[in-house]
Length: 194
Figure 1 (cartoon, helix red, strand yellow):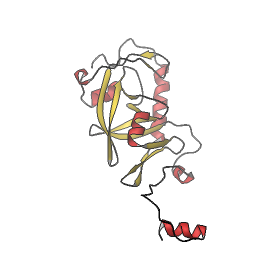
Figure 2 (cartoon, rainbow, N blue to C red):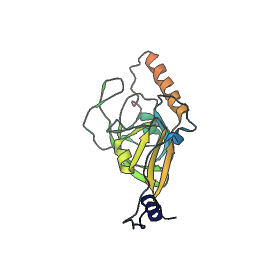
Figure 3 (cartoon, rainbow, N blue to C red):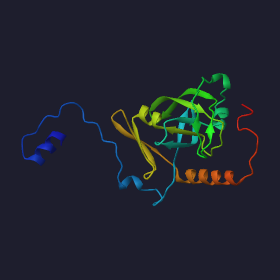
Figure 4 (cartoon, helix red, strand yellow):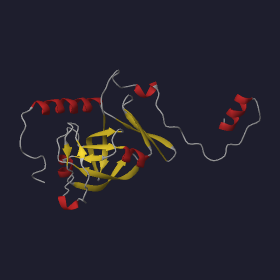
């Protein structure tokens, strides 16, 4: 049965033609919580394909306006400081400290069948995450995220695609961050060997 027939049955009138294509609506329901531990306050940690590599421990942060890359991922992707373009704005770390970025680099990020270019800012700061993708990535993908449902949804070829987060990875990352705060501070820089 077509959408126009359903509309006609509901309104009791003749079928109306629908102009244009109707896209599925991106949203979340209680069904999207199946398989998650509830209640929770876990971060949304996903795996994304960045520059052709599957990268784990990527945090999706819809509250941030900057896509961030940390030194371990930068080294792991075999990138060099010469690959960076200048980035002159200061950033504030999770610890509330000002961080001077090392630079910026544009890399392809694949999510299912879709690939978008992301401008990552390299920061010399500790993080249990390899990267943070934020509003610029979400908007480029036309995606919506839900920490409650532990997933990201976006349209691709008129179908809803999902990126599932991992609560166990998010919990490992928070444990690592807590342990890091308890460690004595070292004067060594995270990127001194870049």
